[in-house]
Image 1 (cartoon, rainbow, N blue to C red):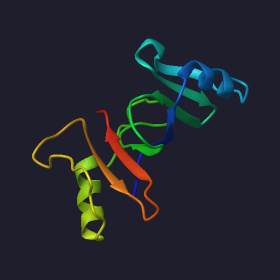
Image 2: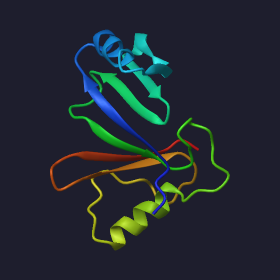
Image 3: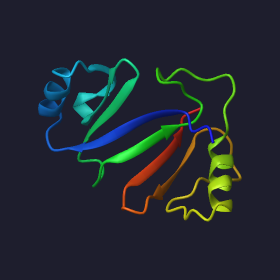
Length: 123
């Protein structure tokens, strides 16, 4: 199953403090808007998102249609097809993508330990 680019979205208490902390590990701002309390940071192929006040838990995130630099892939499996495959494998979808649409969409599942997994297609 091709899930696209992977990142960890972190629920942070203070985005400036977290930004400074991860910069010491070599991460650099790649995207986002600190004034809106979110940043995407990269260190080579490793990507983390810093999100202050946007969700309750850290989230594993996959982006079908993107490579690790958020560049659109020529070919990828649509998020709705990934959702269908997971349903066929008896995975409960917490928040579903509308299968009647095309283009950007997302769905959320929760792993056995309560970790949310967001599959978020931007293209």
